[in-house]
Length: 391
Image (cartoon, rainbow, N blue to C red):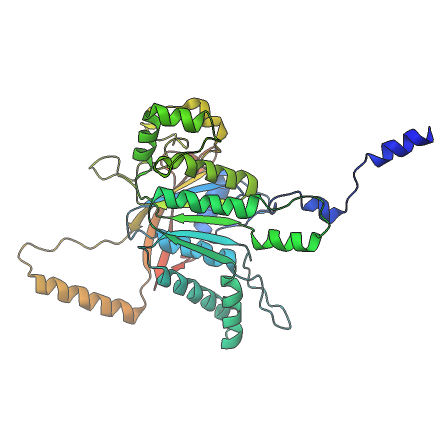
């Protein structure tokens, strides 16, 4: 009897609470709001949360709109609020309200990365001075440096192949970390913290090409057989496409718990002026408002393996647009008027107003659940996003 008891006890695995926590592959606490109040209110209307967190782990958010419609400024704002330190390291630990989380940005080489980084630094500095106007330059630079240490950037060519390889690298560095009981728990925790990924942003890779490329891949029966029926088969570089990208995105959402944001220049549904762009992420993320979604979903049997798109934001651009000049106006007059306008704006510190429409998939309440969506606005001044909801 004693031997049986000892045998049963020996088969029970024992570990500490810290070791059990290591079994979880990602942070489970809510990532919080966007800090754009009109947008947060709209999202909470469609997806209420007791902690007022408008973004959820595993969310896939698509940003679509023309060049100059405010997408990059919106992304810069999300990066700034996510990597910002939670407090000022002074005697009182003055709170800053930052999330202090990790962000990875994948951006084409054609984009102005210097401007994005500079705007992030300026946003952090302005935020600190708004909270503590007399803060020293040394402390501000220290907080900026600490915050930027949570940002990892990959600058690549706008090619599906390079994007797929980067996503594979992210998965390898994060998912393949050791989990569970370890004799060296401290080193294991350091590895996990070093490779955490709370927000992944894919900025303008392969603009407007997603539906076309996916259709081409789906129509190639040999490609479908090799890649969909046998995921372990070795493929050559020419076969790397959206299948590999979507597989990686799905795995990052499920196994790492990251929020993924993909921005693209949208394709208009027709030559006529419309409020919305066509949905770029067609299959396996068909939009319920897209009339052509069913025609793109050629392999419905694979639909269940992908988590759906959660939020789609259409950037309509500036609300104030210039009137057409008379036909008899000379070019020199137009250029002079534009120059005078720029001088006036620089002196008066004008805030440009941008309008967006947000729609959510999988919710039944609020304006975001409808085809019309919910409208919200934000301001931009010198490349910095400004919440104008209180104005």
